[in-house]
Length: 551
Image 1: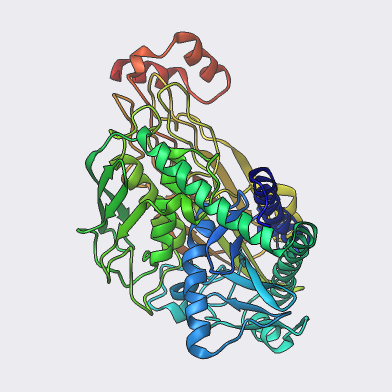
Image 2 (image 1 turned 180 degrees about the vertical axis):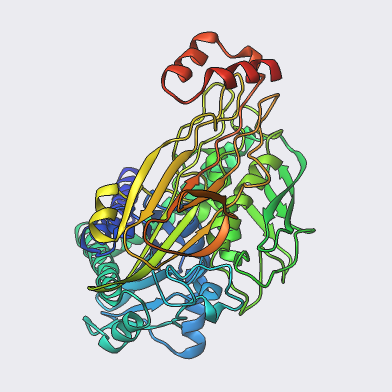
């Protein structure tokens, strides 16, 4: 029996919830604030051929790269004769195999039923420190992949239903925070065990044949829905370019040509800058994930995220470009910042193709903050990203102070940060006058200030949009640019948005993130909405007058 369509739909939804439960198991058993509080992790389910069949609503850059990475991991296993046996799991963080960057560990588990492979489970989690030249393991000073941290080639993490302790120990010892690493990597195993139990329960209930049939149905169903939804996009050839801010002040160019037709979308990144010697390179899996994300936004999140949902998309990225680098070029910031710019680039290119859907630009940066030092209790390392403003849309204001595009994490609670690290958060709130003006204003960015209570502390900021502001649409104005300011002994000093600093006790560093672009002329904005923004502190009266004159 292969089951009826209702049964297949039920199994498909159960797979989706199984991936969500995997994420909850990972979060609840993790040690680091980055995973436990910010939920910087993702989980997905694949069929026995390695095709995506379900994913949790986690991190877009993780999720989009997992299918790409799984294909390469399975290819590696075939070449190296690394068997995915019953009761085993593999682990790797090699970006050129798994996608993203070294901080993200991918843990892969086969699911067997009566000795036969029926599915794969995978989860990816961002570890706050994996070694390298700076705490947090993302530094613009790295010149090769190996300077960014420990490179873990695919190996057994779990075998014969038990940990391979030598792998756990060697990975933990290479980090500045070994206790956290042990806890977080074990949490990833717990996530896959949870998922395996849920899939085994489904197979026991419905039978292996019905289960496999449901997986095939889910892929074909999402493919059919995607083809039907392509009529939302106006056919044509669309082009766009945008810029990253290089480590030395130069501009790194991203270009794309998008061919939209009733049969699919073709993307060609010819003309994009060649790979660079610092970590703004994004491995191909990251580039692919951006394309998946944008397509999913345009065609509807109700389409099941499976292999079939992306079968109408073809992507060409020149080798040795910043969006498809060669090993061992560094890639740490490419996963977090270049991925954001790729999404902006694609949205901008397709604005004319989907004018009723696409908003103005979001803040366009993950605003990565990394710190580390030593206390009496030992070394510590901290990582977080800061939200921005989303762009205004055809009939809505942008959302204030939220993660955008390729990230989907929570914030780190101030209480957790101050309890765990020698840092005080002296200001945290929405940034006034940061939203791009328009009939529909952009969202406001964030202000977050850190005061060092015990030094020295190595502080790294990796952000974007300090020169090229988030763009508006149809007369809407740009959002405010990113700013970083250091106050030392009462003296204020602007800091480049890609910097590593040595801070001392009493130093205070403030990050002001970018706001979203506005949509439509500011002169068309209803006065009651403007007054509401002024009353809430998002807009000053002076800026309101300037915006109206500009419109």
